[in-house]
Length: 170
Image (cartoon, rainbow, N blue to C red; front, side, top):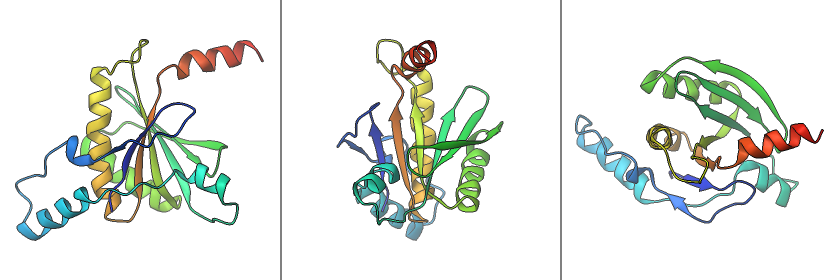
């Protein structure tokens, strides 16, 4: 099962994004692996993020969420179990090395989902960086699905303005 979903700020969306929309399956893969990936990509099932699941079902003992902020040159990571978080590290990796390192960190930290920030411009429109984030998220979703993990995109539109307002009012 492969789950790649977009969540707007402060609300859960029922929109589900299949990684197949973000990239094509490499032609260098053998036929059996390609078939399994296509089957995985065609079956997308919605699960709420761990934080919302935990809130609606206090008995649920799910894993951690790994928050990912993909920047132009660095990637920031934070770990959460519920609504509180702790910063982890900053990575200076790109491409496949970054994706493999994210999977290693998730395994070490017992995370079973990735929440990736989707940057947008001040007017809510997607930017060139949004396309890069979608590309990484799509590739990561395929690798994560092989381990039974989920990938979510978090709409970041307006979050910087909101954070500034909160800091001013403190």
